[in-house]
Amino acid sequence: MVSPVTVVSDRASEPVSGAAGAHRPGDWASAGQAAGARAGAGVRDGRRPRREAVLSLSRVLQVKSEGPKLVPFFKATCVYFVLWLPLSSPSWVSALIKCLPIFCLWLFLLAHGLGFLLAHPSAIRIFVGLVFSALGDAFLIWQDQGFFVHGVLMFAVTHMLYASAFGMRPLALRTGLVMVVLSGLCYALLYPCLSGAFTYVVGVYMALISFMGWRAMAGLQLVGAAWRWTELAAGGGAVFFIISDLTIALNKFCFPVPYSRALIMSTYYAAQMLIALSAVESRDPVEDYRLSKAN
Image (cartoon, rainbow, N blue to C red; front, side, top):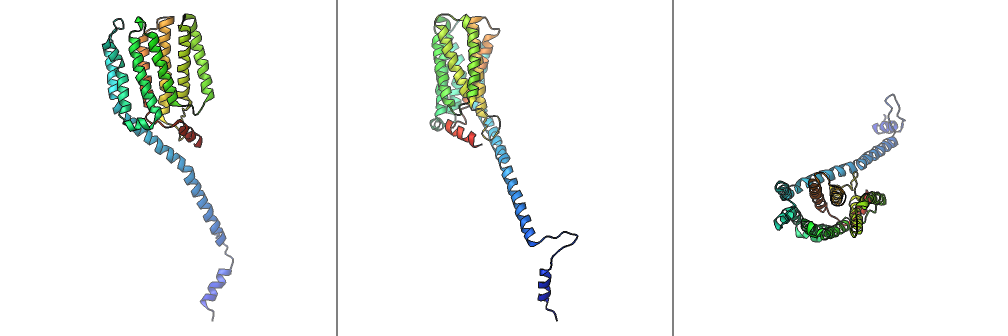
């Protein structure tokens, strides 16, 4: 009599074959390992898209959360354009109306908490830059009375503070070279119209605002996990500021620019709003650089 155990043992020792293409135990292990590797690769490949999707969603939600804080700024800007006080009769009232949107941007940054500002030096520099901007706006109200250079000086300090807030990492030499070429072309356009001290004042001011624009756009990344909407705001703000100041220079020294005041003030307020927004996700520039390199 044959023991069932013997039958099972004999059958276990026989090679398995057939039309169904059965596998040996070693094949099953190999297949399992391969499937696991493919699954792991899928998880690894999917990790970055999921992380970027989460980051994108958080950025959209953050943009929406900043909107209500900017309502006073938009109202103050509308007040300025609705009243449209004449420049021929400067007064403290006209200075207040012109500076009111900038005051609202002070409140916008303060609404994030004093602790936020103290924890982020770049945000503090942007806040102080807005303070000097308001002083510059007030001086320019009386520019025909000899305070134009005072206003230019206040905005020069503003651009140095903004450039310091944006930091020197990453360096982005190609972006800097483009800014040098563009600023050189703009100065060449203005140079025949300048005379006396303004030949140097305008040249130095243009160098400062171009440097600020370079630093604002140096960290701009439109793809990847390191992308942040605040970097886009900083770059856009710098471009609007350059357009506004170039229009001022052309209108004052070269030729009358049609609708110059509307163009100057609309781009100026847009620039200041975007630069103020860029402080919301403020981080140390070295940390930003390391994050961009890691991704």
